[in-house]
Image 1 (cartoon, rainbow, N blue to C red):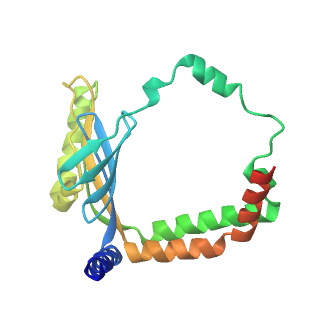
Image 2: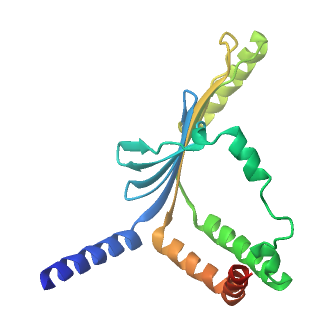
Image 3: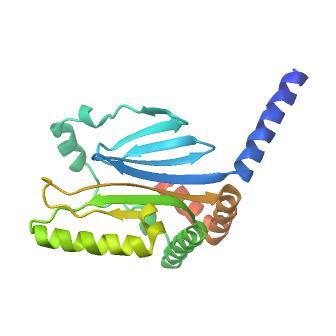
Length: 211
């Protein structure tokens, strides 16, 4: 039993060290009409497909989407659910004092500002082929683009713009990678916890359950 507890403690310690010393990575990509957004730590995490509204998991090259339950809900059940809410019932938010609601909004804004200010741009590239009906305009833009890339050759690694007039529709592909240190996320979350009126929120939740 003691050996098992030691192994579990070591595993928890190693996991905590890995989480604190690594980064939270946000990756978004679009290719051939398919878009994906992932949020990972050490290559493993959540995966989302905005086009089909699917949520899944990813670990390295392994990807697995969960089955959607939206198709099991019929129209009749949806209408019944919409007609059910009690108009006289007070929501959790309405039971909070105005000062507490202001504090919650302020805490949310501060959290978003702190999080965005610490996001690090890792890499990204956009390749687009816009289609123009006028071949003269497409040729002129193509010439300007080639001149620009001749002066700034490194810009092509970030944005590659190639005008076209013969294709059926415009196409674009790209990817973007942002990251933030996990210890910064923990610190920001701790500050959010301190900014929130926890006592008022807990009191409002207890009153809601009692009512």
